[in-house]
Amino acid sequence: MKPINSHNYSIYFKESGYDKLNELIIKNKYSKIFVLVDENIELYCLNIFKSQVINQFTLIRIDSGEKNKNLSTCTKVWDFLNKNNADRKSILINLGGGVITDLGGFIASTYKRGVDFINIPTTLLSIVDASVGSKTGINYDSLKNQIGTFSDPKLVIIDDKYLDSLDERNKISGYAEIFKHSLISGNLFDELVSNSNTLYNDKIIYNSIKVKNDIVKKDREESSIRKSLNFGHTIGHAIESLKMSTNNELLHGEAIASGIIIELYISHLTLGFPLEKVELCKKHINSLFPKIKLTNNEITKLYQLMKFDKKNYKDNTNFVLLKDVGSYIIDQTVIKDSIDAGINYYLNN
Ligand SMILES: NC(=O)c1ccc[n+]([C@@H]2O[C@H](COP(=O)([O-])OP(=O)(O)OC[C@H]3O[C@@H](n4cnc5c(N)ncnc54)[C@H](O)[C@@H]3O)[C@@H](O)[C@H]2O)c1
Image 1 (cartoon, helix red, strand yellow):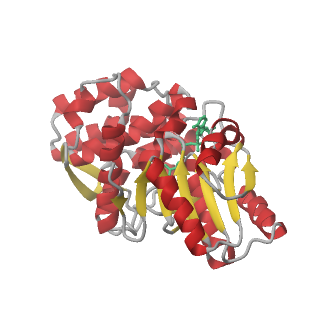
Image 2 (tube, rainbow, N blue to C red):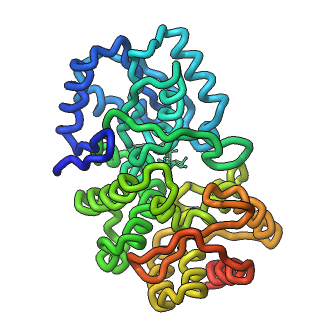
Image 3 (cartoon, rainbow, N blue to C red):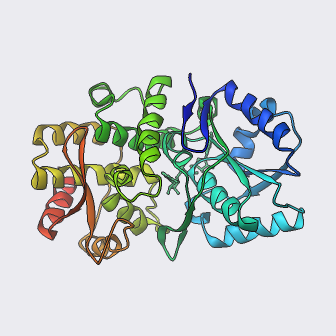
């Protein structure tokens, strides 16, 4: 598969990615190579990585999970880098899911005002979304991605071999972003919506990354069209934050899938998105994702959480809405009645 070029870096597929990585390490004469993983990556993915990379490296292991995408983990890793004599010519390789690539990218982009980093995503979600697009970040004060940077990796390696060990729930979670990419671009929509059996293959992965990358290349800092990638996320992130650190903690894609259904219905009410397509998408999503329950109390909290959405401006909650598949409009203010209706549509159907 041909590499996909972003502005300052490229996304390489399979063996060609490791060739580029080995070349880069030789060319840049890095003083030290650090590889950031969590315990699952160490167990399931590190051997694949080791078999492809020629250089010695120092492993940094953190505890897995969204709850560890925080400042306290950053502090531990920065301490580790200090103790292991990392300098500005060191490189950090983020081998893992979106938690590792987000957190590792943030750590690298701030350590000594920025050291090089590379993303090697190992979950479907990080392959099609988190590892590309140059957003790094951590959660803060129970709010998703509240602190972070825009920072480019030196390169990204996409290798779906890592997915062999990933559990089904996490694969389905990643699919939420694939489906969102098809909704906003129209790319592969008919193929995906009519088939709940194939979550990914080379073509689906390539297309999904390309949709995201084409948008990011035009608007890296999200002042305009990059906001389209937040379709489903205004409500989805609020639901994710709401359930964070509870007994019913959700995976990112699970929250986003519910957000997609709710925001499709709001799109129908606000912009006339065809109801039959809302129904089609809902059926498809419900065939894959668990239904999330929300109490009245939680719905009240959702509105408070939406106030922190990064797309907001001057106290308005801004949505990305769709007129149709492949046709989005950003910066839409939505009345509360329509948001209520969207939530009710999701909960009661
Ligand atoms: N930066 C962005 O643009 C962007 C975009 C989307 C999502 N995100 C972020 O990504 C994060 C979610 O990423 P995620 O879903 O990959 O979660 P994750 O990184 O927590 O990984 C999910 C679980 O799978 C395990 N795992 C990872 N790869 C594995 C493999 N190959 N085999 C077995 N187990 C494996 C991990 O240890 C973890 O327990 C969220 O924090 C979200 O905010 C960022």
